[in-house]
Amino acid sequence: MNAAQSETATQLDVAAMRHDASKMLDENAPLIRYEDLKAAERRYRENLTWLLREVDAAIAGRPEDDVQAKVAMAGMSEALRRLDEIEAAGLAGEVRRVRRLARSVVSLCDHYGTLTGLRMCVVCDKPVTVGRKSAPYDVVRVSSGGPTSEAHSPCMPPPRD
Image 1 (cartoon, rainbow, N blue to C red):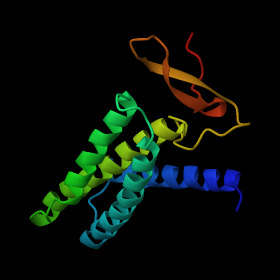
Image 2 (image 1 turned 90 degrees about the vertical axis):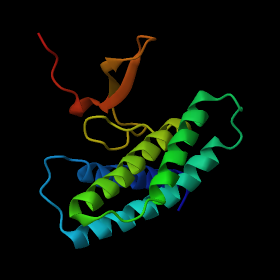
Image 3 (image 1 turned 90 degrees about the horizontal axis):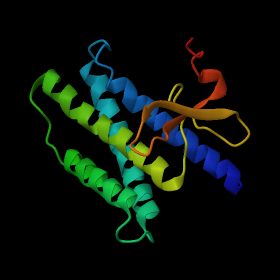
């Protein structure tokens, strides 16, 4: 596998992690079976282990006052804290605990993307790759006034009149 294939594989892995964790965060999803919840927890723990290592590597070599690195380190600390939480009482308690792990997966996917330049379509949640048309998606604007996200051109909603 060459470098471009490896980068694409990593993008797909991060996209798959984010998608999987996002399903757990859907408040309208049907109640999950205990066995499925424990399987999801194992996946999130594996994903967090990989993401913690990769985000830490992406932080390495950045200046000490780098804001993105500091925010990512805070996200890493929160993920580590959540990994140390003990099993909760009852199914509802366990669902809340595993959802916190899922939130950390999504958060570290975001930090990984920010630190490495990985761009994700905010509509379909798939990587924005070179050669595929995309455009700024400025639903939310930051104080600088610039767009905060990107979407594939086919994913963009039609313009309002």
